[in-house]
Every structure is written in structure tokens, then in C-alpha cells.
Image (cartoon, rainbow, N blue to C red; front, top):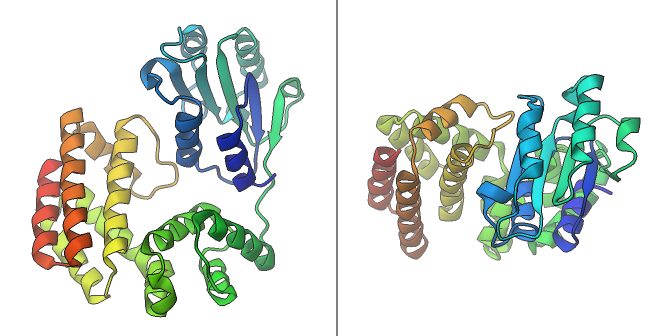
Length: 312
């Protein structure tokens, strides 16, 4: 199955016991974990029922063993996610498998880029690599459009593939933005180009960097560039929301793999507490409401970006 078939299956059925996900391409960990929290952990205490380990960062069998023995608070079963199984040596792989087999109250997901005979006894889920052939990727993008409830012309789907290749995670984020904009995309072809174009990626990087650096003047300069570019309110808001979600993800212990601004996100996250997180989202949603009602307004943007900078 491809990665999106896996996400759909994960949303619709429960994978019990020990499951091994074999894959070659990158996995969108955030998307996978969001599905888990909704499908497997609704109403549960994440602190006591949900455990995530990246073996590439650290392998500590005592921590994993503790999670296997943890009591399920409010849930029938705990959920344990283990990334980077292939990073272990043979001795540690056997030690981990021996420990996992003793679990009787957890659903376990092991991610590995390599096949191992020792894993064959478990439920194997093999994710096919994304094709690099443009025609195959266009077919996949068409399927993704249906999932997001949007219709794009073959020409526009080909343009997305030209810009992003087989980077499905980035394509999915672009389609999420197009979904937010809705029917306007049909009547405003220039708006489509602004959302999918490489310029939006560069602008998002610069805006994020000045925000994470708490650079008020840099923020104003980058906002000027976005406004001169004619950015749509939804795209502007999606950039801000993406930044805040990344900050909170790091604050909650997730790792931003492959993000050029990873260290800056981590620095900001270390300075946060629950009260500050709540304030950040209160400010954002107030700004979102006003910009959606009145459109792009520089006074509103300046006020809320300044308040957001003060809040981090």
C-alpha cells in the first residue's frame, strides 16, 4: 500500500498488538501521531497512555520497559510508537523484541527502513516507495485532491508535481492551503500560483526566522514583502498557524527532523509554559477572526504580530 492508503487504514481500523511499518520514504510523524491520538487515544491521558521513542536519538531499554508496564488510565490499551528500529545493533534489536513480546496491554508501532527476520513474527505493514515518475505522482496528487475535497485541472496538478517532485508531505500541505481557500481558486488563477509557488516557501522561511529570532523589524520587513506580493489572508494565516503548531509540537517533546530552523524552534519551546502557549493561541485566533472578517489590514497585523512576539 502507499502511504495515504496506510493513513486511511489507520483511521478506519485498529491495529492491535505489535505492528511493524516497513518504509523507504520519509514518514510524516506528525500526521501519523495525530491519527493515533484521534483513533486510539480519544479521551485518554496522553501522559500515562502514550509513549514515543526515537531509537536514533537514544536507546534506553529501561524507559521502554517502564512504558510496557504502565497502567492504562482511562484507556483499554496503551499506545507505544518506536521509530528508527534499524539504528540498533543486532544485540539491542533482540533485547528490544524480547521486551516488547512481554507486553499484553499495548498496541505497538515499530518503524523500520530495513527488513529483519526477527520482526517477521509480527504484523507487517509495508509502505511502497513513492514513484519518481511524474505521471505516477500526478495520479497520486489527483487522489489526494479528492481527499481534500478540491478539484484541480491536469495542468495545475502537473505544476505542483514540477515544483515539489515526489515530496508528498509538502504537496499535502499545499493542498491543505488550497482546501482552506476553497472555490476562489477556480476564479483566481493568480491566487493558485501564489499558494503553490516556490516564493511562498521562501517567504514562509524568512517570516519564521524573524519570528523565532524575536526580530520585530525583520517581521515588519517580511510582512511588507508578503503584502507587496499580494498574499491571500488565508495563506498569511496558515503561515502563522504552522509556526505556532511547530513551536507547540517541540514544546510537547516532538523533534522537527529536517527543519532548517529546528534549533530556533527548540530555543523558543524551552522558554514556554502552558500559560504562554494558551496566550499564543488566544492572540492568533483573535488575529485570524479579524483578518478573515475584514481581509488584510496592516494595523491589525502589526498589532498582533507585536503581541505574539512579546508572548514567546
